[in-house]
Image (cartoon, rainbow, N blue to C red):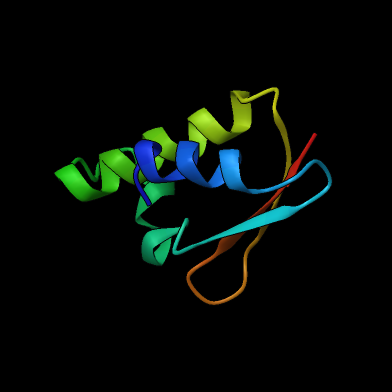
Amino acid sequence: MNREYFELLLQLVRVGGVIVVDNVLWHGRVADPLVTDAKTVSIRSFNNDLFEDKRVNISMVPTGDGMTICRKL
């Protein structure tokens, strides 16, 4: 998911609503600092942006390829 799409979703979701982002672990590659391909770096950066975003509470679920549940504040 790109940042622009996430910003649009935040406008559409009401307070208390949720956005679920899939594939946030990218087969574990986001946790390996030696993996630096563009897609992995992009997902790693997006995950960090979600972590620092004060407009949502997040919970990462490490099943499958990972998903992050974002609840709008």
